[in-house]
Image (cartoon, rainbow, N blue to C red; front, side):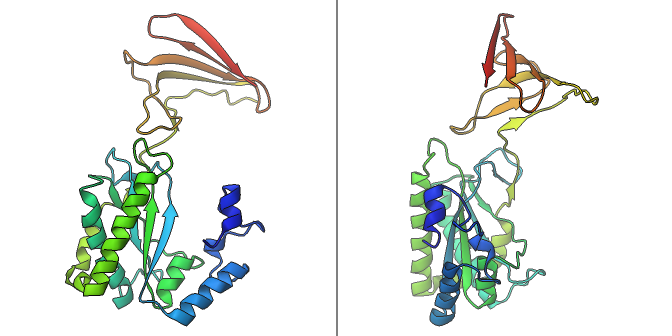
Length: 261
């Protein structure tokens, strides 16, 4: 673990407020210098970069949440495929096969846009095939315990294929067929909102509130279409610092109010 202080504070940045994963060039953090020195000294054939990602990513344009997403990191803006990156792609193809039956329709591919400051991209540039694994969201698994098992299975599958050389049989073109992450899940969607453009209190009229999350998260979908299970909401906000009140009317017309200070 490179950033124990960030883990303790539940934040991405270090105690010095440095994003260590964007410190591969400047090497401001001592941990960053240690990591680069290890890579330069050991010169590993393959590296695994384990991350958490937002549970709001979808598998392509489907309604499925991306539970696990893989990436063979690019080492330049052109996203060239050399032997180092090809190896990572081949390994990922095998890893996806090992996870598909356990995560049906919930395995995706992370965007390979090149980030010149990132460690993953630079480690690939320095000669190590870098496999990035992003753990997203899975139903009834808020602590991602099930997804940890999926990480273990995927990495073990990869290590076996490295040991016996079977990963070389995989066609890297299959990697491109893995559906890419898309943004089709949201905590809150507001449609057909009406606001006052004057410097006066804004008023939003929202219809059809549905509390139906794809996973145990605070989640609301707001549309203008009626539904038996939906309610009508009128939300008024006087200012950013004022008390916010919401008045909800259920489908039968009964009224209740709530306020949060």
